[in-house]
Amino acid sequence: MARPTTKEDLVSKSEYNFEKLMNLVENMTDEEFSISFNFEDDLKKKEVHWKRDKNVRDVFIHLYEWHKLLINWIESNMRGIEKSFLPAPYNWRTYGEMNVKFWEEHQGTTFDESKNLLEESHKKVMYIVETFSNEELFTSKYFSWTGGTTLGSYCVSSTSSHYEWALKKLKAHIKNCKNN
Image (cartoon, rainbow, N blue to C red; front, side, top):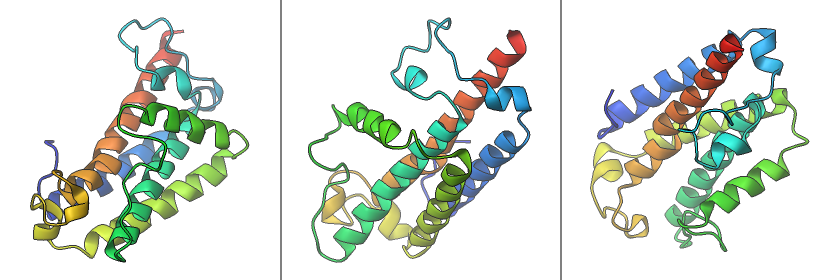
């Protein structure tokens, strides 16, 4: 399925991918769930996140924290309080460091807590998305605070596309478990 370019597609694909993600985790075996992720032998998996996340909780927390970024950014700007998407001191070149910070902050978070946080933040993001029209979401520069990107593009990146990223990572882990 292509990247959503309408509100209807954004909502549909986000809900579909979220449900798919939750079902995948629900159907993991005890072994797949309990073994730490290990992608060191796969030379194609060079990005930092392949080494950073060690379990389902870490993936869920990552998604949750990006939901929080989106929610706080939209709510602040809609109240007239100008705020950038990424909090200082981070920018689009250094956001990987922010992701590591999120990971570090949640090492004491349980899986059940991470699941609850993710489910609640997903609901809140989807509620917020529903409050905007298709035009508000997908018209370039509709809101000055989105810069040259549409609000919908930020929403897609924090939901449907991010869920695809999580699915890919978890499927790779499950495949590793079956091959070992």
